[in-house]
Image 1: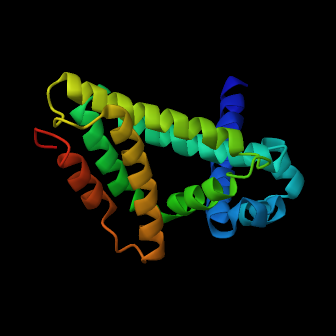
Image 2: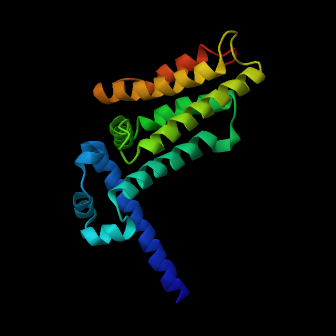
Image 3: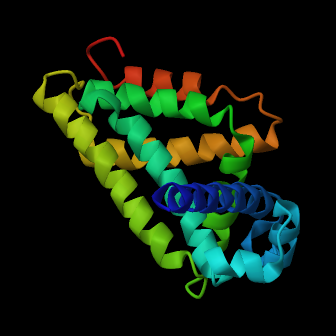
Length: 199
């Protein structure tokens, strides 16, 4: 009985993951407002009520997709307990990782733009996410400063804002330029110019 329950839970988790993957792809293609739950359900080979069993609203599905992306990226940035210069290096590595997952980059770019509207279901999520992202980058620069690795005149708060803005701007250039933009290379060069040690 316990083994049967475990199989059921594993099957449910696999189905949930498939729904998140298909939703991420469709939100990236059509935007949040242009994607329908019925289309996502169809892509997963399940009924609309079957999808609603896992995600009762379109808003709950969107937030689950965004939170899943953040979990993956957060684990990447924190790998090995990095801080300071090591954490700044991770931002460049994250940009390289993003170059291998166009659908996720498209989703983020489309939905973050749509979410500037105060009535968008992901508005509060993106306000919080940008606040946390900038804060995390500022902390990495502050740690680099404390370690004596930051060039004179580089302010951690301004540098943190610039880093996040550069990452997002590079993603848009990369999407519009057919993937030609070297996001990781540009980001690495930017951060390296701010440091007194090799990145």
